[in-house]
Length: 78
Image (cartoon, rainbow, N blue to C red; front, side, top):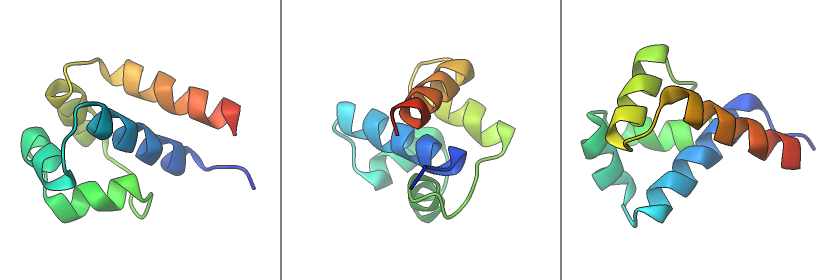
């Protein structure tokens, strides 16, 4: 079964968080969002707003477009 864009974005978040050895709680705190919301984004239960994408990118010291490129690669591999 093919992944949805939301699932690919969630996997991107999970990978970034694990690369930095952060818990969901620590990653959410770094991003300035609620831990439960961060978890919902990782599980693709919710889709992020543009504002949230920018916050996540800032927190992970990357560009918003880099997050989307990573998600796109995950979709291509699926």
